[in-house]
Image 1 (cartoon, rainbow, N blue to C red):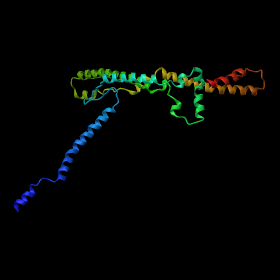
Image 2: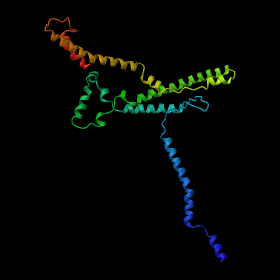
Image 3: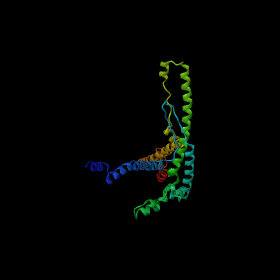
Image 4: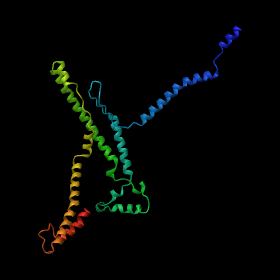
Length: 257
């Protein structure tokens, strides 16, 4: 009876227990494979932009530009340039100055829109000046310049801060008053200003002023004509701003500009 009991105790584990133990051992491996796969996907989806790191445990700025990534971006820009060149020019790019002025190049599109619902293929590619490639390349170029400018400013500021600390001869209250050096970070607002500002914003302001004047002049001309007809004297032009026929020509020309 004792031998039978010992035989029962020494019997190997059941197949289900073996399978469960194998499954328990296999689960970490599957989790590891899933983590590796997720990491690979994340690595593939990373945007190829220059690495800019600002910070540090001691508050110092560490600004590093990955030149290899910048060269890769340049190669990608060249490839995108060739792909953009392969796109057919838009109707706006093909239009003449008069057609752009009077918007005549939109006439075929308006006729087509009157007969059917317009799709993206009907509208065609955008104009060269409206494509995002030019905005991206200019912003990227100005961003690299801003990072380099900030790095130089931080180096000068750090040296000045160290000189101030050296002059106080280790006085604790003065060092606390000066505090730690706080590095500057690249300014995205300056990047956008340099990429799209300067003469463009002044040009836009000038166009806005001209547009406001052109919208206001027809009102003055119409008021001048009303005063002419209210005077009752067709030969008296002294109280008018312009000659009556000049007012008529102005009412015809100014709305077209």
